Image (cartoon, rainbow, N blue to C red; front, top):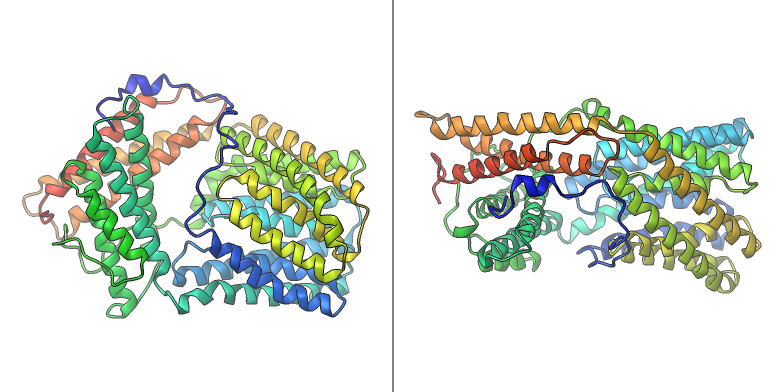
Length: 554
């Protein structure tokens, strides 16, 4: 924490507001935006064009269900990506199976909406608890919700699931294919991001400027997040000891350790060297070194804290699950009451809103509304082209898929501009429909989903957010005490200081995330802002001191 920022000034900052400024601001694209964009084309095009050639485009929805799994896990090392993609495909099939069976057993729209809302809540909770990453639950909810309102019989379910499973396997192969050319690409990229973020922070520190210390705080938080992300990514990279994968991982771990120490001692770091090293990593050259290693790492060390069991991670997401279930139910039922023929549009709109807190949910509501309305206009422009024939319809969907992934990292509303017409065109796989009615229903469902979804987020309070801040503060204090004991030990256990340092770094990162989440919630008791600032300040001071501790020679 910057010495220019007092606890009192931080505590007095307004946090309970719903901003409009900056919500629609267009940012820089993701470094790897082209990877999911190209992957989804490679996964969707073969099955859908094949079905178009066979004049069975009515089955394309099930093929797309599996193919869209190619959007996931592009930031994961390939060993972890294989597991995550397999889990996404299985999760997609499970949700699709429930939806298809429900659709074949009942035509009661209210019952189907209730099933869709429960599925959306389960998908949201599991995706957030497992940190599955974008597009998270939205694609899974879209698939299962659309299937709920597709005409279905029990006898058709196995065939439709088999088609989705086949496309899912193809999506898995597409997602894993880049590993044949750059097997360590994700690990290199995340390490380079950590080095660059730390270099940017040390430059801010060295400049001695900043908006009353706010520039320092922002760069520090960004650097901490990048380093923590690198730790977690490398910890999931796998590789047997002695193999090429393990040696590369070890070399990258040492670079992350350098980044950690530069973050702890910005006055003694060399940002140009950090940036140069990051560029070499991205160029695909041999993993560079930064002089003598800053730390003699224990042979079997891990850069990330031990992961929790899934069941222990689900508890904190109970309010979010309740918001999702309530909001989706209300949105779907309201759409039915208004006579809209596709209530799942409102249901999916509501499901897409829910973020970590109310403030972020508000931001997403504004972005979704603007993006959907602009997307309806784009649909009107594309309809004449899409109606030229089945192949033209598929090609339009492919182009919109690519556009969505190319734009969504710049701002969510830009991605929605492409997602909305794509969702409208998907409904025409079974036959061309009257565009005016589709557009009207989509606009109505957008407003219904946004209003009732955000209303549910406000109505279901998350008072546990404050309790989690208290737990995070206690964890930081415990980790800091452990690190100080390791620093002052006369006969330290080998690796004990290194383990304590990483535990403290993980606890500090969790405190920042927890505090930011609580700051965006409504109806909270007074939050311990001053204690958070003091805990972060003392924790980072101890973290920096570990660089001078036993066995850690710069």
